[in-house]
Length: 241
Length: 124
Image (tube, rainbow over all chains, first blue to last red; front, side, top):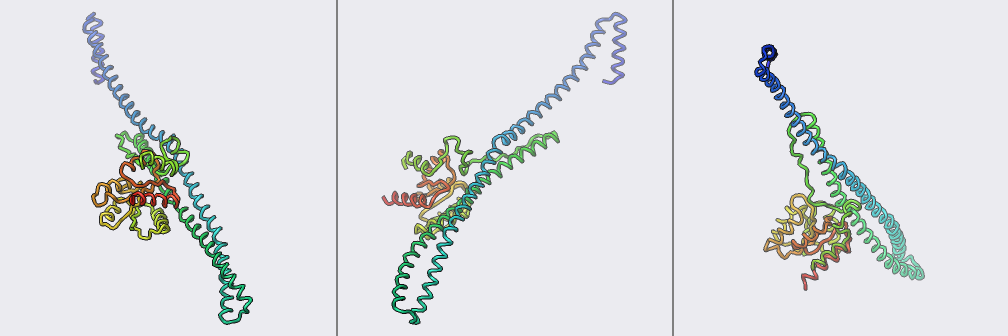
């Protein structure tokens, strides 16, 4: 519809009114209104599309909101648990080392002293009285060393078990990485939507099938996890194990 | 007695290996997931399987199912040592035919107890 068309429509309308031709005047008025209506439809269509885009926006927003509201606090709790576990493992290891080092030093000192005496005995430079003392000392040393070596063995086992933290914390950190990736994907979608009007792509939210290690205060809120080996044993025996 | 230890974390494999050695089981082999473990099992010579659950490639539960559905391996004792502690998961493992279930972190005493229990049942 050009301006010229419109002008001629208005002129026709004026002419019809001057001539008292109401029928023609009404027809022309309807035509003019029709133009207005079709423009209204275009506008409604545009608004509908905007609404649709906003809805898509909203679903991305709610995904990010969910991550922000639930998963980030959880992740923080998980990472704190990682600190706790690594600290415990380090403490456990250091305690054992602190316990064992003096025991090893004492064994070493005793063995060194006995070896010196034994050397003197071999080259027959030891009086009989002293030999009797040394025999007694050797007997004591044997008893002592069995006990000391047992302490050392137990300590080494404790150090061994303490290393289990690496597996547990590794699994927890993997989960947090997956959460960060989800968040990243959500942000990328949001940026894509707000910059270009393109269809949103699948974000590939990785569904965590296996919940992994139980983090106290995060995963044990509901009564669906076994929190100790005894819990597991009870459950299995209830199943006839 | 040869024991196959399956876990994707090498530290955990080493821990279990050392604990087993202390218990008198010196003959062990290792695999890092179900996919690598299954051919080892099929080629024979493994008498006992200790496996994690959550592993990339093939999970411990899938490995357990594969073992139970293989006529040559169906009776192999399987002990699961895992951080998965949901009740429904433990039930799932039991239904798939696991012989023992230990949750991480665990103690040397627990491992000993569960292995002994499994052998007791086999012998009786």
